[in-house]
Image 1 (cartoon, rainbow, N blue to C red):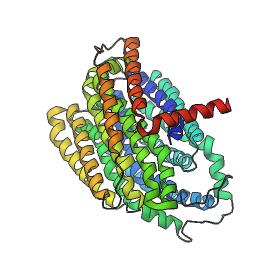
Image 2: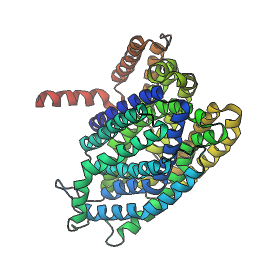
Image 3: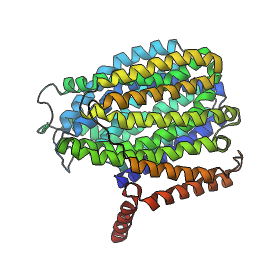
Image 4: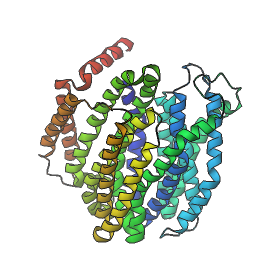
Length: 490
């Protein structure tokens, strides 16, 4: 799994670096109000894409795991699965357009053409996510990375050009829409068309009839869960825009996204490498077979998220000075440590403990978890945003994700006891303490890019050395094996 995680780290890491470069560029070219317009429109588009389409992503990976392995394309059953996914995608379109129109009408910003740009972003994001999950299901990190890199490069280039031409926040939404749509159609259009046209192969492991209906039964609770989860992820900036103003949303979104998306990137990389393996192990040998894979996943997740969260806590001033425009920095310094903590909690909840419900296909249990978190988040936002502004929004997110994590852990144990390796956890915490000792020597000046980067590199090296000393998760053996394999093929 370590090798697959490294492959997905490269596949997600390069697009992630381009996305952070885009954040640095856009916050220097746009005002907080213009960036807030972009953030609000993309929040609505992302929320609706999650609510109406993301259940298809999870159904794809879950049902693809039931197919027999095959080297060719399409594998047995893939044509039928793609037809069902395409039908579900088309079914959601009319609802999505109507919902988007109503949501944008309520926004505090009414830029001309924003509805059409947000509609393109919403449908583009849904299609893009579906294509990414097709790569995950087939364990193709290279194809996954090509899609992500093309999307990030297009968004960066087009967004920068539109911003320089004076199109403001609406221009960034158009750039995002084209960034999602063009790679999905150009890089994967032919493959999708082949699946839709090919004659159906034997569908071993799939329902003989009513595949879409079966997928909808699996995905409907997930869709409602995603709707409630999206309230937690997006309501902070929407309510901040309504209660404080678009400018506050722009400042908040820049600082929050820098930390939260970095945490989400690491959590997603581990999940992408682990989830198809967990599903196949579960289908082959049940809980006993899956537990070993899940233990490795937990250690990779903790080993990636905990040191990153600690780094954001101590290096926020330096990161804000390096990454963000002048008007966004003061707000980001205060927000980033809390946003990183929210990312840590969200990563474990979404990409680990929620798996207990998904593996046993009891996804309705996620509804209670998501409803509890969403309700708490909205109430806290209403209470804290008028009193604390941007800090109230980020603290509400932390509290909501903490509540969701505890609820998912407790309720999920009724279906499946997710492994929590204590020895590995203790050594990772020890390694993070060593990392913090090194970072504590850095005074944290904003403008010192090279010294700050050296401090981060030194702290990361100390962290890795401690992990190797204690051989956490069999790290020494895994790295030695990859070294021998590389020399053999080199």
